[in-house]
Length: 219
Image 1 (cartoon, rainbow, N blue to C red):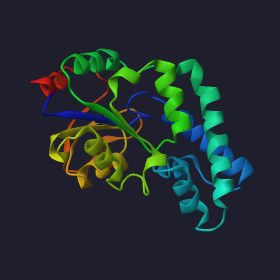
Image 2: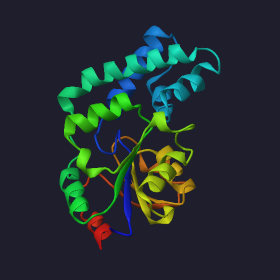
Image 3: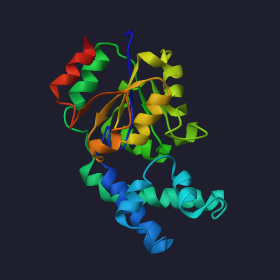
Image 4: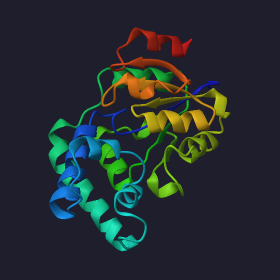
């Protein structure tokens, strides 16, 4: 087994779908819950668990746990309906995953998504063989930027934290990696590099997985 592990975020890192998540949230938050948020305000809240997002916007105790779960599932159903025609891996990731697999590099998914969405992507793109561990929103007490998600991934793989490289598209996710003692590769699908300027653990930032600099990770 390799002495390095690759830990992947899911949305915006394995598939380029964050715009669709934002649209679904924008619709529910404004048209149904009357939050009156701008597009940029919705985008700013796009991290962590769904219930954490709702609590940040509306406050603790505004919704029951049951209502937050209902809203969460409804949001994901809308997202999946709109995104399904576009469901595919980010460019170059198919070859990257296959090379990693054949070089026995342990891989995991660490995501703030609920398993309802994880299964949608893993099953839809037939990714089961690549990932020895999947840590979702359902598996942690607090999501990113808390380090618990990536720490659990590393623990389940039996890897030292400083031997894990995290692939992330969001500043909060890179912060989570930093707090876990891990370096990160940024996938530039949804955020500007200015948003990552305060984070010292970034190895490189790439548009997709065809970037030749990623080859250095296999040496």
